[in-house]
Image (tube, one colour):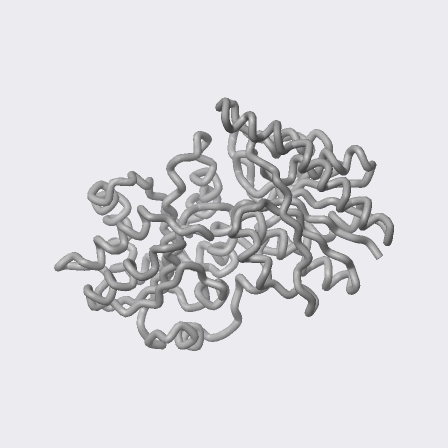
Length: 372
């Protein structure tokens, strides 16, 4: 039986799509062996430590990979740990190969690159799953050393790559819920017939998004009156966010991390989110109108490009994160005010998302992986 080694981590945006593909592989080939080589960041272990795939715990191993950077200190760390990360990849491949064929599934980013190098040395097939509309340095390098490249995000103009195969967005089964909307709301202890806003800054939260929602909730003419909120705050921020909603009289479930994202999306009439590939894919799959506030510090602004397909379809709105709470209230806050007040607009956005087709990228990616 084949062992599929997934390489990628550092954020939920790399790990959750890997889990989606892994689920599809297990469904297509019961008994397949799965291994995840991830980063040493605590988030990776936190996510994978809770996972069960085909009834068994996810088998994961952190490796010491570091992001590439030309800054002297960061470059030294990258060089120092590159060799150790390649060795860790080779050891994982050799151990798996003793039991049968091996395929490396690179999910992109700094963790995947040394594992692809290990696959080259060990002469095992590898495939790249590109998740962002603007491929980063690591993915551009990886693409030169794998047998196939799939891209789950339409590549932005000027960033097209010959030979890269487009697939729909990748979401795991747990990111979509087939419960009724009222039941999803009850799962979070909320009123079943009240409009619900989902707020997520991605797997690590976003302080500026938290501040914006807190400022809007506290306004005398708050646009959030009559709404309730499911809010993923990020580590260390939940109590402050919870207190803000409580003082404003806004019903809310607040947590550092949402384990049941499918249920959260199923409860939502509208979302405010970062525009990481995973969040964009989940908004698409769940047909939830979304105000995207892309992470503002990426040089290539790839999150803005990630959201482009939903914005152009009419199913999402893009608003810059200006960091300063006052400026965000006047910018993204006014966009959100309009969306909260306009049920017809939200319904039109939902219908636009329905026109995008199914988010079946996990099954498509699994087929490609099994073809190697």
